[in-house]
Structures are given as C-alpha cells and as structure tokens.
Length: 195
Image (tube, rainbow, N blue to C red; front, side):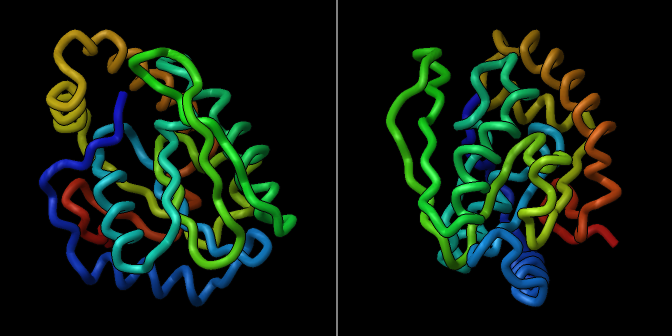
C-alpha cells in the first residue's frame, strides 16, 4: 500500500473549514496543533491531507509509513502515539522509521518537530490512545466499490486479496474507535464537507 493522491481537487472551502476548526480548538499536543484525517482506505484522505498541508505549511505524517505491512493496522496507533504524539506532547522531537512496502522492512528515519500544525492521515489514526492529542478529527468516507477501485488502480490487481482483508480489519478498528461518531467534520470522497 502506498499513499499516492488521486486526481480529486479538494475544494478550498473544505481546507478553510478544517484550518479554522483546528485553530479555534488550539494545540492539544503540547504546542502542536494536530489534525487527524481518518476513514477507510481509498476514501481520499491522502489528497485532503496534502491539500491541507500545502495550504497551511503543516508537517504531514502518513499512517502508510507506520503500518508494518498489510497486517500492521492494529499496532499502528501505538507507533503513532509512542514515536510521534507523546514526544510532541512533551515538547520533544518525534522520530519514526518509515516502513518500506516493497522491501518489507523499516527504512530511513524521519523527524517531526514540536509546534505549529501537524496533519496525520490514515486508516486508524484515531484510537482511544491517540484521540486526546488531536485538535481536529476529520472523517473521510467513500463507498466500498469506489475505494476498492481506487486502491487497485494504485496498488495493482494483484493486491485485491490484501485490500479485501484490510477492509475487514478497518471495519473492526472503526467500530471500536467510533471514529465516525467522534469526528468534528465529515468529508466525502470528493473532498466536500458532508453536512
């Protein structure tokens, strides 16, 4: 799984609404204002996160870099909390090693500095152990057929078995985390605020 954005153009009013919400709520992770963009795979989170980071100058962390492969969804929130969010909350630099999906191994290290805005995007970033660090939680949704088509266009048809298994895993994660319910804003597959 890789995090390549698709051709959707996020409406500027969506970016403005998220930015305003995050700034109004202020930092919840030490001096860092963290925006979490969660939702099922293939729904448009990466595209939205890229637009938000570009508009605000925010740092950007992709959960795809924290999953330890196709079976890494469950443990990924622990990595996010321990390696990035907890250090930032303490005013320290967060550090993580990117997972290389092709080599199936951890690769180079990355740093996340405290202060300013951080956008975290990816399936399952919002959990009981991470939720308190976020200033704004955004839920992005798309129907299963659309997101599977997007995923296979990105990762190739050979990945279909992995994708279907992942979709089952994420349903369980979302049910436990109640992400849809706790989100401050809902966005559709085209980057529009879903009212």
